[in-house]
Amino acid sequence: MSSASDQWRGLTPTKLARRERIVDAAERTFARIGLKAATMESIAEAAGVSKATLYAYFPDKFTVYVTVAERLAEQMIVEARTALVGPGSCTDRIARALIVKHGLAFELVVASPNAAELLATKHNLVGETFARIDTEIEQTIAQLLADRGERDAAAIARTVFNASIGIGERATNRLELESDIRRLVERLCG
Image (cartoon, rainbow, N blue to C red):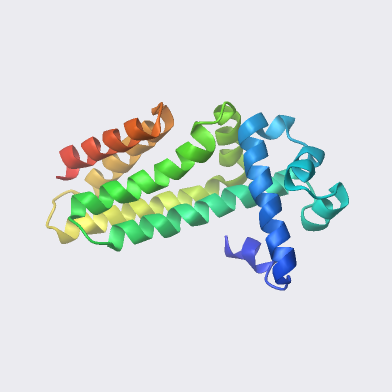
């Protein structure tokens, strides 16, 4: 993730703002029509820039997609880390971290009519990035449980994390996602 952000360090504030506007527009475009139907032209139009401007920032729609996914991954890990070290009981922190992680994905991808395509593409193009985040979150949950004296902390963390993935992918709305993850964590970690 850092290598993608490193390439933008020398940009002026105006160019950075334009790049963010492009990434925001691409995120909405991918969610609305999917990656296959999205074109550089549709992304440029949604961002309010010319195709030439878009190409000055990104060589193709797949690079734009990777940037959108990496930004989501960065947001997920930052917010999950914050939840895991924040106030509250161990169970509350674990639930908040999983809700944050899966809630962000739900809002952007799972709730999209193009969810299957976007998830498959995510796995193909940036799967390793999300796998690293998943591993970090799962290991942190295991450490929290171990610090609390839980036997089999790693196995419980793995079970809770993997079950939360299923909840995140199958939830039909945000409230269901949150209540099901809370219930899961309370039953297995409470």
